[in-house]
Structure formats: C-alpha cells, structure tokens
Image (cartoon, rainbow, N blue to C red):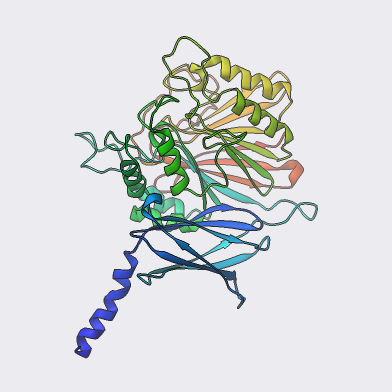
Length: 430
C-alpha cells in the first residue's frame, strides 16, 4: 500500500472505531465500595473494563459481552473500591478496538468521623426526543437538546431523571425491538454524551417510558418496558418485597433517596369499582417503613407524578385522594421529618409545601420539562404552591446540600436551558 494512502487509512481509524460505541459510557449507581458504568455498543462486542486508583499502577480488569437480546448494553461493575477515592477507567471494545476513558469518585466514609460532605444533584423530567418518521404531524414536540450541554457544566454529583425520560410512540408499544429502538434513540443523542460521563445517573419512569399515555397496570407490555429500563439505566435495584417494578432506595452522603413506581400497580384512572391506587398497599408500607428507619438529614421521595398539589387534575395524586391522604397521615403519625417529594410529569416546575398539624412540613418539588413542550398552569388551583416558583418553560433543577449534619440546609435552584437561575429557595432541616 502507498505510504500516503496508508497514513490516510490510519488517520481515519479513530473515526471509524468511535462509531462502534453507540452510547455512553454513562456513570450509574455510586457507593463507597462499588460503582456501575453503563455502555452500549452498535453490535455484539467483547468489552474489556479496567479501573485503577488515580496515580496507581495496580489495574483491575473484567470482561463483558454485549448481545442483541439486551440491546448491546453492558453494566460494568467496578468493585472492591476504597471510599472517597478518585478512580480512572477505560473501556475497550475488543472487536473494533474502540475505547473510552473517564473518571469517578466513590462516596466518602464520613460517618462518625466528620460532618457530611457538601454535594449537589440535578433533577428533570419530560425529555421528548424528536424523530420525524414516528412523530405526530405538525409542530415538533421536542424543543431542542441544548439543555443537556448546560446541565453537563453544572459540576453536580448526581442526576435524577424523574420520568417521561423517553417517549414511547405508537410504533414502539407492542414490541421489544420498538421499545429498544426508542431507548437507543434517546440515549444516543450527541448532546447527552458528555452528560453521561459527568455525573452519576438514576432514573424512575412515568407513563411515557412505561407505555402509552396514562398507562396503568393493565398495559400488556409492562414486562418489556421494565426490561428496557433495567437494560438502559444502572440503578442499584428494581423492586422491593418480592414485587416486580422499579422501586428501590439508595443513599448519598447524609441523604436517602426512595425511588417509587407509580405505574406497575396503578389502577386505571377511570375505574370506578375496587381499590383506586397508584402505589398500592405493599409499596406504601415499604415506603413508610423505610422513612421511619431512615436517619438521613433529608429524605427525597422520587415519584413520576405530582404528589402534594391538591388540584385534582390530569394525573396528580389528588385524583386518587384516599391514597394521597393515607400517605400524608402516615408521615404525620410517624413524625417523619424532612420529607421532600421530587416529581415530574406536568410540563411545568413549582415547589409545593404542606404544613402538618404536628409542626412538620412536607415539600414537593416538581421539575419539568427538560425538552418537551411546556404549559402554563399557574391558575389551576395549587393552593400549596410556594409563591414565585411556577415556571412554564424548559428547565432543570439543582439541589445543593450544605452545612453541618444537625443544621443541614437544602437549596433548590431552578435554571433555564441557558443556565440562568430563575428562582431559589432554601429549606433548613427540621
């Protein structure tokens, strides 16, 4: 081969190889001794995953195989780690020789030693990704993806995806291949690739990543969409009390997060007989048990739809008033303090506050939309809304924890797509 053409061929190799990684790497769950890294290849690949303490020559290695039945995704687990330590990692696809590098830091072992570290996390929901071939005719529902590049620059530790992260279409609902296509299309957006590597990601679902609009427990494809969520995200677990679904819990520093499933066991919105429920008795009792046990400075409860808003409209929890009231009464009866619901769904952002008779407060920070169309519902009758917090444009939240353990402060900030702060509220630990 002519030397000139050989050089051209070799210079093109990195471009060709890069294309073999479909999406990622993405940082998944993070603990003191174990971290998940997620990646998706374009075809079946043998993957070599290496990690090491920054500055160390000791390298740990694992091998993984991506397969069509799991959409060529892999959950790479770095284990036997040391707390509070910066690690570097490298992913190599053996067939194509494509590779990717990154870093992660394990959680600190601060308990009984010092005050909890300050940290921050991002919230958002309703991320519609346009694909004209499958979209409804007319004005595109997705309003641009630049918000993801803005979020990647926020220097946060985590991002919590609060549902409707993926919008399944009519062509997707009834097949594994359709559902896998939709998730792949979302995860592969160029504007998301830097964000996947920048912070650790956790996700719940709402109706659109679970199934059709307003889908409930009757949706015939729910096992398929549960499988897809497990393949495409890297949460620490899925389901509690031997029940299927996405319910789980994790801790980060001095804070506990409770991820709820508002779809798998939800009775139909229009059903008039039988128990009307969104979470169901088993999930409610697990949540209350876990909240009572928790010693966290703040307890964040993630749920796809608005919980506190008393306006019985759309899919607010207020449309299932008995279950909503039961949860509130249990939180009050058990004297559970510092409960913050984190919700999405509504294509608007607002902070709601309910003052209980025992002097405690419950909050609900609704964070929506990321890229979907927004709506102004400031007049719908949310009497619990904190004044000045309603936002009816694309936005994201940044929640920051600071101060010593007994006087911990939570600062909630809402930003637009350009990173301009729209409002800020501070909540002090009760």
